[in-house]
Length: 237
Image 1 (cartoon, rainbow, N blue to C red):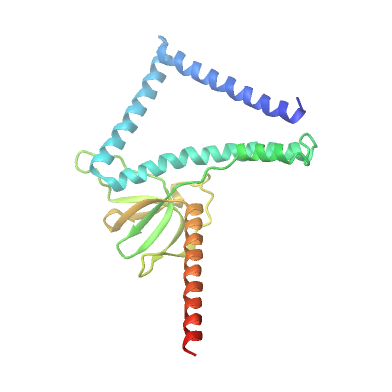
Image 2 (image 1 turned 60 degrees about the horizontal axis):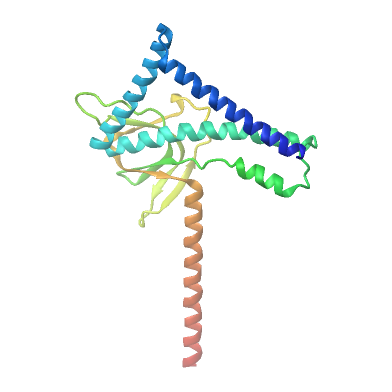
């Protein structure tokens, strides 16, 4: 077996061992009889039950908060995952620079980087009543209280903002230069809850592909129309 293959196999084995150890630790904690074990286990269960109950309340009574909560939770997972992928990619580049991985082994390099692909982050697209929109990540979702499940305002770490034109298409105007993995509540903007018209998921790569596809279709239509006009002009001349 080649040395690069041994390196990859070693990484896989280490991941399996760490997963096994983590799973075992959680199992021991959940079954433990000591005061510390019981406290940790209780805390884990309570937090999980609390998160689930909040999400159910939002899902049943406040779709906007529910959508923001789902996006926020998924983003935390994906951003953390991408940070770990970034570290693994650095190790691969170092291995290439040191000659551990031969640059000429194109297939091996393609396999490695295919396994180390970044996840596309799903942002929140928040459209206001005045057609202004913000694209970013929800940072703080207030918990529902006894009086109301809807909050007075929501907070979002903006990535882009702009407005919708007469065709409801997105027109980008402001780019916010934030590292989403290093932000805090100070980087948030607060949006009045009663000014929010819609909330949906938004992926930049997906939007780019759809926009490009739409432009290609429009170009084809214009070319066909131009050909028809030239054909018609030729016939009547």
